[in-house]
Image (cartoon, rainbow, N blue to C red; front, side, top):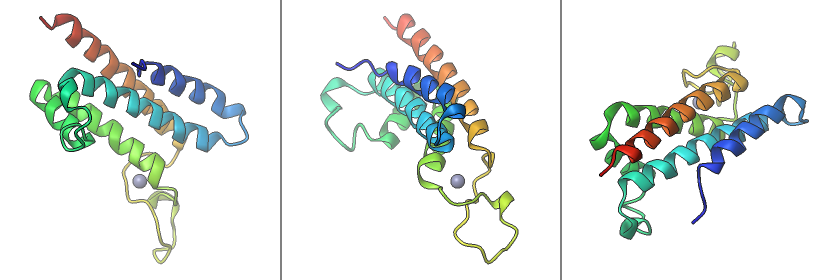
Length: 143
Ligand SMILES: [Zn+2]
């Protein structure tokens, strides 16, 4: 099985290389996605039975978040934040509300995330590192 914890390292590498890349924002946005998926898969392997992994309803992002919430509410809320950051990075390619001066300008992003993608990437990195450490502790404490 592919070791999804490598996705955190890939996220870090994308983040590290972003400033010198010709597409820094794309690199930061991609990095955020790698951080989220590393944590999503780690949470999934902790909370979802292997037999259910192919079941789209039982292993969806929503199902994993819900199963994680039953084990650790705070951890689940951090994974939710990371998912929202990932959705913002992947789907909200328009300008953030802070940068839009004309109300008629559409579309615009109404999220409360920082308009600076680099800052959001640093936030995602910190959350992912924290989640990965917590999940590691959970696994080592499991019977
Ligand atoms: Zn947004």
